[in-house]
Length: 112
Image 1 (spheres, rainbow, N blue to C red):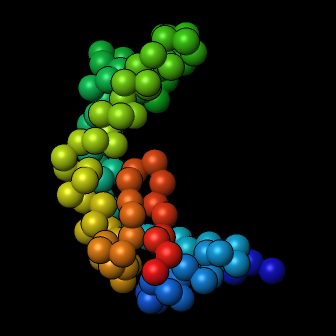
Image 2 (image 1 turned 90 degrees about the vertical axis):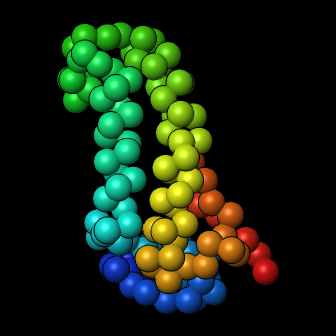
Image 3 (image 1 turned 180 degrees about the vertical axis):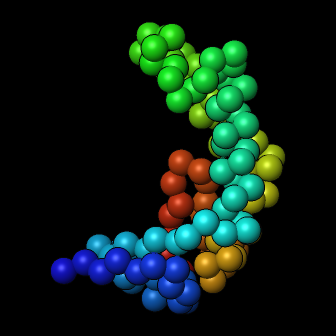
């Protein structure tokens, strides 16, 4: 049976073991995560301007949205602010960014 941990701080090794056994870690919004969400919102709004991205399906076709998203995803992943914020988020939950390979698309714990 899997466990769900809410705002749990633990060592990287304990978190890694739990994740590999199917457990889930959920963290509340924090000072470290809010700027990343703000960056995402800003880039999404810019990408779909002048339209509201929340109702974009009423304005653009799925194919048109896919073209925009194909440019938006790498712009977000490789944004300098994103690369600066991810290590802060890792540290905020007790992780060590020096032993964790990270990118926006996936966070993978390195085997040590």
